[in-house]
Length: 209
Length: 209
Image (cartoon, rainbow over all chains, first blue to last red):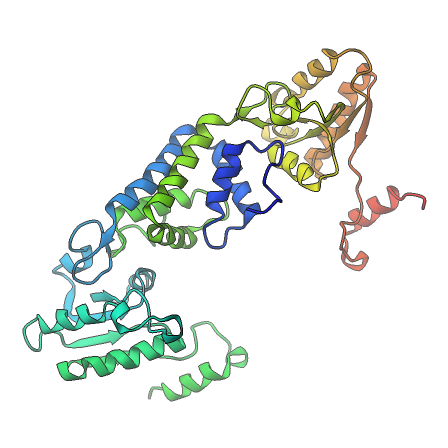
């Protein structure tokens, strides 16, 4: 916290401390943090206790699924434990937030695998830093042919592309169909304002009507 | 929380609960709340505990100053207890956040009085719902002439103006000089893009150079 807030009279130390903790969250600056602290002060006591307890409970309970490395509050996550889902299709994502984005689309009923990152040699992140080994072991551990497709849903970034290429190569010996999410115009967008890489990808991924 | 998040597989209940609590904060929607919950999950355990403790400590310790009704962690706030400040000038604000805005400007070294709201008859907020009585009692309780000026720093809104007018009238019998914050062009603004009320106020408040 800058001098802007430190030691301002009229802001009790307990408020300054809370604002300081809140300002560590992404997208929350000092001013917003102070505003949130004032709002939290106006909340009923029970609601503040609920929030504090939720924080601790989340940290206490939530870990990673032993199979897909998605978030879970038990050894196997709800997706992996759900026999109604198609475990023959595995969608590989970079982060739990990406998994949620796909779940929200309600367009996928298979299983997931969370890599927890993407290849970024410049930042020293190599294949061993990601859950790539466990993905291969997971597919190899299943009866031959039971995993019919691996959908690589890494981000449409340089790191995501590099990771997708690496994965496709690593999965080759397993003889499993490997696909990648389509690139194209985002729904609702204007062709006129789209960047060249997006337009180029939309052309390349075009589909016959 | 809408159906958008309820029961999404891959989001453990403890995460949903935390996101739900966070989404109660102003300016934080469901998507941001989930993103914040994911960030908080990635924090080291100690930092999450610190945040939870700060919340509880803030709610436990911070109350209102018995004299000015600003935020305080003891009976008398730091401003009221500071003998280096000029207690002959009282700046009247609507909320603790307004008090902080004036403190941040480092342009005022007097005392404060927090009304905790503004007159809003439409919402059933009358003079008795604000700390107006205690302000009058506070001035009357001091030796005659020791409070030299009351600066009314309510918002430049209809409610703020109504409150300022009411206060000026209520303070009349106490024979204390009553002033109001200036209206004019905000610093850094273009005259061309200013609204008519602001331009009109800037003309009316003009000062000889």
